[in-house]
Image 1: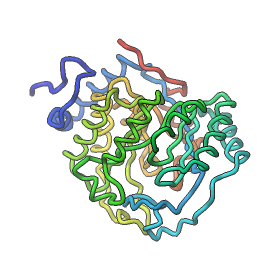
Image 2 (image 1 turned 180 degrees about the vertical axis):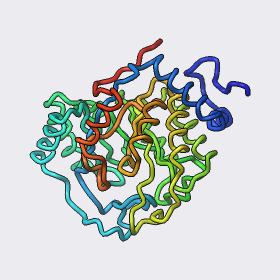
Image 3 (image 1 turned 180 degrees about the horizontal axis):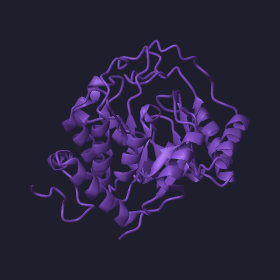
Length: 326
């Protein structure tokens, strides 16, 4: 089989090249992914983040996977923006538990000026604790990314979710280009980009290849790439979606690592349903970040104790990460 890897790791990947990676024998794919991983990262180091929903429910978007959409009857109660005291208390607890980055998510289409100012104060507070900061607030208008940068924001999360040609099957209240426009504003402001997707939403393997090719073609690729496994939630349109084969999920992690060699690849939502052996394969495939804590916005996550035990069994350790150029 012809090796689909471009001559230079950072070269642009076509959908066809990424799709060819998916077709490789599993052992060969994991060997290539682990080899790429070791060229750029400490092999047994994992970055730990904690994610907090600072404003829950009532979102006007109709994303088919999301319990926070006002369009779905998930039973989730709408809550206002958390107070600064509650957010900083949660950040302090996460820091003591070993998290180095604190991520804050708000269920908005995008923040208005007043809401943005409140988030800016939260960013400043978390930065004051000595933690990296990340927010996901929906779509940003011109000038808003610069305000977040000036407050000291390290990362802005805005996922592409899925392939461009599958996007309309997941959400119709905004367009794929809206997502790309926000990412461009974040990048131009000098804020690091956290951008990934969700798999297991009924998409094909070609759609997964297209998503990874799109992510890898961002200039530069995202510094952080969360790969989420769909968590089916009652009351949402995707609640009865057939589960993705775990081996296919591991393949997706491996392909993301190969296509984006210097990005931190985060094993994100869906870990609570993954056996330890599947998570171990994901780390072997190049995942080197997780969310820590028993909650991810509105869905469950493994306990910190179970994560510590898994890390100990696998010989992994938590640390801050920076890719090498080698």
